[in-house]
Amino acid sequence: MSLKLILMRHAKSDWDDPMLSDHQRPLNKRGRASAKAMGDWLRERGHLPDLVLSSDSTRTQETWERLALTSEVRLMRSLYLAPAMRMLEVLRQAGEAQTVLMLGHNPGIGDLAQQLAATDPRDEGFDHYPTCATTVFRFEASAWE
Image (cartoon, rainbow, N blue to C red; front, side, top):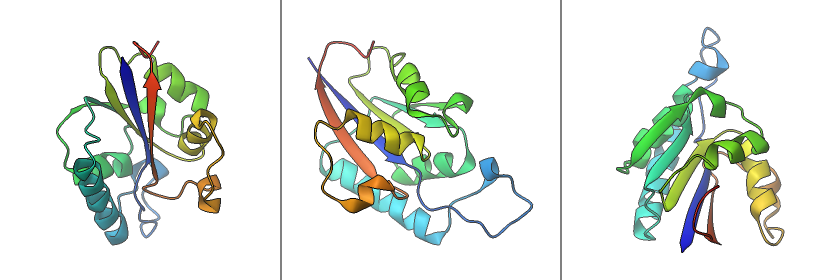
């Protein structure tokens, strides 16, 4: 059986309101447009998740909403600024889902993408895993555990 993992960093967020905590920062105009475009890209290529494992921050929730995909979503505080190893622990609890979208933050999401890649990415920007960056992995496995 084949499993698919889609790793995505949240879209570009707004830094304009100093009264908001990092956890509360919303998307800015560019981020809203990027998230919509990424949702279109995922649909066009058939990368439709059965399950979304997402940080519970405002910007990840807004990114998910703008993707406009219909999937079960689990908003998890434990994924907020989580390191790669914590993200793997959460992924192992994905159950029966065959396609999982994990929506998170740097540096954890970028580190996880680099650790899972079979070969080093050619794009220098991959080292920074920019906002709304998305990587799709396919694994020959029967379970996420």
